[in-house]
Length: 295
Image 1 (cartoon, rainbow, N blue to C red):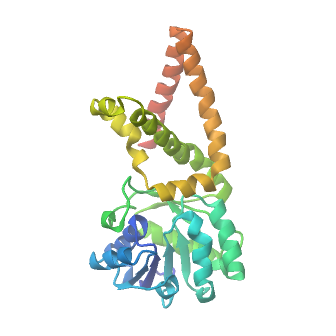
Image 2: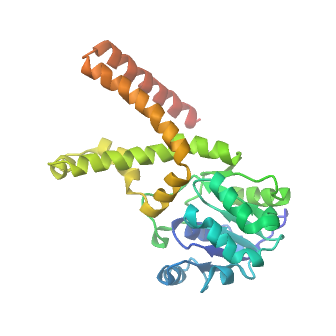
Image 3: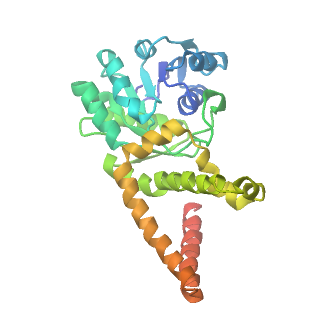
């Protein structure tokens, strides 16, 4: 892709699921690609993507998906990043833009360094803050990235022209592009994404697993629905994300536990004033954050 916004000749997608499929559809909608070639570990997924018109050609391997492509997107579990990059490494072209969509970045950067070595300059790690609690290419949408933040975490070795291309591309897909260091990205998302998922998994399991849990959930309303929505996330993806960012998530969990302890102490001591102040502080903070985030 040139900075004059030329259309890509061929997009290679490795991982034809929700994120990769939505990227392909968004590229089509924006008129930025002529042909899409896709590969998934499961042949049935790749064939489904072709039948749905998400991709034009179902490739039998990751290497064949990237061969002839002038842009490549990896949409695989973060734990599979290194193996995937190694599988295509000898075909990596410094003139081609390579990106991922992983939810952690420090591990992706290390994997890319090991797999690509001196060819790493054309790889731009990316994290679109978009998705659903459901996965699969049948849930892909061309509008998934509209208005979504996309975090780029370029390496020291990354070609600045590739960063510019990635920025222009995501912007043309309707996203809002930000840049962070990989470690800063992981610390931030441990707090605002990874820990909330961990808590949602634990909370839903606690309610559903106790005697009478099904009866309790039959009475649940919007609060339960909203709080537990993200507990429906893809198990493989969230297993890998939480393990990849375990240290930062555990630090955030410890901070959470401190605040939960304070609330529980107020409850045990029946201290209405202390409980009120703790709730008020959180309530006011949440309202102020919402007002800032909607400006």
